[in-house]
Amino acid sequence: MPHTLTRSPHLRLIVLCLFVSFAAHAATHVWTGAGDDYFSNASNWIGGSPVGDASAAISFPASSRPAATNDLNGLTVQSIAFSAGGFTISGNPITLVANATVIDTSQGINTISCNLVLGGDIAVAVNGNIYDGKSLTLSGVIAGMGGINYVLGYKHYYEDGFASGAGFLGIAVALVGRNHPFGVLAAAFFFATLSQGGLAIHAFVPKQMMDVLQGVVIIAVATSVPEVRRALRSARRTSDA
Image (tube, one colour):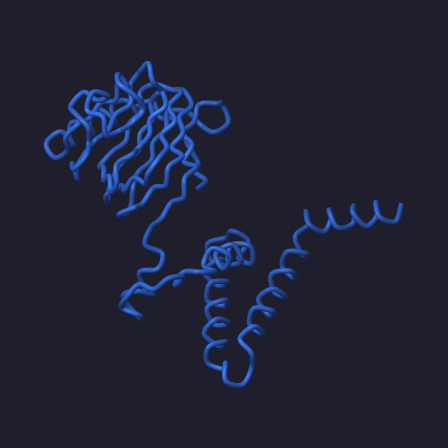
């Protein structure tokens, strides 16, 4: 999940305001790691373990134990905040409710390696950027509401593998659209037409023909990129030598 992170001289004031606003709605749980690595151990927290707290605000200040493992099932939080660097959060998925915040004011490096489930839009603020070694890394799988139109508008139920191929199709759309907003929109309509057309003519043409056509389009667009063409010419010269 790539982010463009910018500095803000007022970030600490914004963070303070956010926590003041959360105070009336969320219970704050401050990590100490006094007992072990696990979220479920109440002795690791000031304010107790966030287990069962659907509006938890979890905070990670300077601690003697920078490794923290979420062993709770179904943990839901309103905010995750770092004021010290060197933390790595792993373990079970963490659900971020709608309008949740992930804030890092540590000027250090922190990593969330467990999966994140997004309940809606969230805000990510980092006091630093990806170029100066002061960053927050979200390396877990991020699951959102990408299939909501399919489930609620078409099937009306979940089924195993209903979103298979969606990741590949998303990459194809971004590649063909050249990461331009209007290009991505046009590419999305194009691939949607191919996919739907494949279903409509399935009785006459094998569905795999649509996959072949998509692959041809992707290769054609990829080879038109100057960087790819230079790489192909370089590989050809190397093979000839």
